[in-house]
Image (tube, rainbow, N blue to C red; front, side):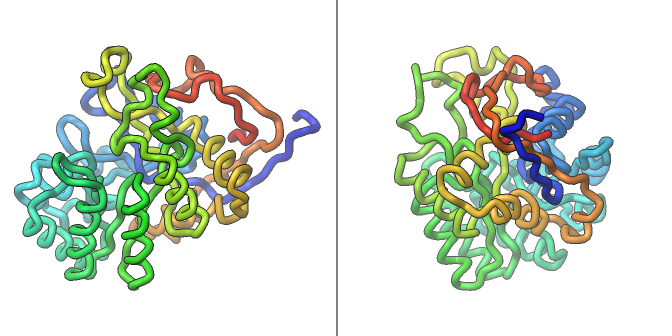
Length: 339
């Protein structure tokens, strides 16, 4: 180990928002390659989203996608609605029995309030979390969050906002927590590192959902992380080259993130923003575990996360364990790396 480096050890880091394209698009990512990326990225456990083909809306699919994979544990979220169509609530009770981590339709926002009310009431009875990607055509992030918070208030169900990206959205979550609502939310590495001014050459590697915000949005998301309002999650979204090597308007949303998340969040929040290292680690461990059934009990069974801090290294996307390379960080240097 170089003399400039020191090793830090933490309870196992958990990423509650990853996309493994299995089943569906194995050329982008298989479960095995995704877990390899998680292992290399320093994670002890990950939660896969249910937007597979077919979707994770059956107990058998959830059970098959939930496993221990060596030293990385894989949990599966399950759909709120059948087929992620937003029309009929899935069999949440059976999905919970099969081991679902929480309920989400991920990129398909449940627009029908009556459907969401039923889902959150039933999830509340199960003491399970409902999570939404609060972005939908014709609606702003804040409008979606505001509506969902009203249902949370009505039902008492625990509610989690996925990859928040705007100052107004952050304010709504902050106020909801002050009110005492059972609300949590996550920030991604890309939304705290980048803003829309950083987009270069209209590269689709900067295209994601929600899109990069303004510098003010980024400031407020960072502040909320530092204040303990937001946890971290990668939204690891691998895509094959054919879906990114194309004009912006035709390109798929999302970037890979498992193998760069620890370096980026440490650089931004600890080195730039002065966040306490222990608080930074809690946003990757204690806070994410709070979303999972029996999360606190899981903690002791997870491998430790170790990082080497001090010596700068560059991101080399060509060496990723992930099968995909849709990454805007190639060549950037950071000084905290999993080991």
